Amino acid sequence: MKSAKDMLDSLMGPSRNMAAKDRKGDDFKMDNVCTHFFVGLCPGQLLCKHVDAVEKCKLLHSVALKEELEKHPDCEKYKREYEDKYTRRLEEICSDADAKVAKEKRKCRPPETVIKLPDHLKIKVQCYEEARAERLKEANDRGEAGDLEGSQMAMRSSQQAQRDIDGINKAHTSTFPGEDVCKLCGIKYLLGGAGVTGYERLKDGELWEEDHYKSKGHEAYKQVRDALTEMRKKRREREQEDDTARKTGKERSRSRDRGGGREGKERERDTRDRGDRRDTDRRDGGGRDQGGDRRGDRDGERGGDRDRDRGGNGRDGGGRDGGDRRDNNRDRGRDNRDRDRRRSRSR
Image 1 (spheres, rainbow, N blue to C red):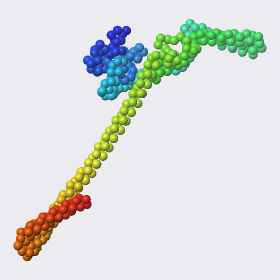
Image 2 (cartoon, rainbow, N blue to C red):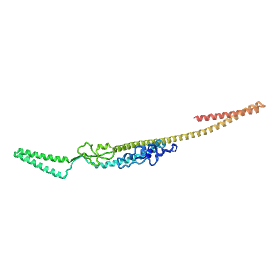
Image 3 (cartoon, rainbow, N blue to C red):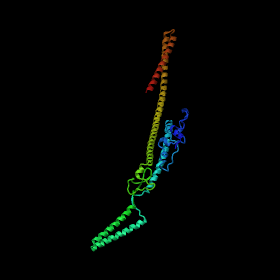
Image 4 (tube, helix red, strand yellow):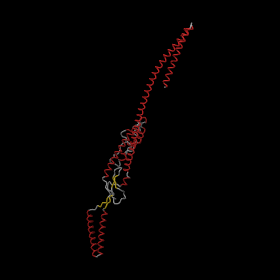
C-alpha cells in the first residue's frame, strides 16, 4: 500500500514544498520516476497482478511531473527519448507473449471422448459382453428349432446385458472439449464455456474460453498490444517526417549552390564589363581632351591675332579672351566626356 508521501509525490510532485522560484522544473528527470507513464501506460503497473514474468513497477507515477515535462522547453526531445524506450519495453513484453503462444500451441489437445473404467468394472463389462453373445446365440438356435417363445426370452436377456454395458460406460465417460491459446497473452484455455456438457469438473489451472476473454489479464494484454500498435504508427510517421525534412534540406542546399553559382558568374561578368567600359572611357576621354585643348589653343591664337591687329590694348584683351575661350572649351570637353560615360553605362 502506498504511503501518504508517495501519494502526495504522485499528485503534486517531489518539490511540492519548495517555493515556485526555487523549483528547477526538471524533477521529471529523477531516477526514481517512471518515464513510461509520461508517454503512455506503465506495463509493470498494469500486468504485474496477472503475469508472473512482469515485475511490479516500483517507480514514481506522478501526474504533476508529467505536466512539468509538458512545460519544459526541451519537451519534444525528452518525449522522443521516452517514447523510444517505452516502445522497446512494449516490444519485449509482446515478444515474450508471442513466444509463449507458440509454445503453448504445441501442447493443445484436440476435442475427444474418453472412457475411463476401473479394473473391476472392466471385468464386469467383459462378463456382460460374454453373456450378451451367449444370449444372442441361444435366441438364434431356438428360433431355428421353432421355439419362438424361448428365442424371444434369450433376445431380451441379450438386450439387458447391452444396457448394463452402456450404463457402466456412460458413467465413466468424459468428453474433452479441446484446447486453444489466446493470441494476445499466450494463455491456454478450454474451448467453449461453462455450459459444455460432459466436462463439468475442471482441473487445477484449467480455464474456459469465455472466462478468459472476460478476465482482467486478457484486457491488460490487449491494452499493451494496442499501445504498441499506436507507438509503432507514431514512429513511422515521425520517420517519414524526418525523411521529408532531410530531402527538403538537401533540395534547398542544392538550390542555393546553383543560385550562388549563377550569381557569382553574373557578378564576375558585370565586373569584367565595367572594367572594359572604364578602359574605353579613358581612351575616348583622353583623345577628346587633347582635341579640345588643341582647338582651344588654335582659337586663342586666332583671337590674339585679331586683337593685335586692332592695336593698343588689344594684346592684353586678346590674351584674356583667348584664355576664357580655352577654359570654355575645356568645360565643354568635360561635359562631352561625362555624357559619353553615361551613355556607355546605359548600354
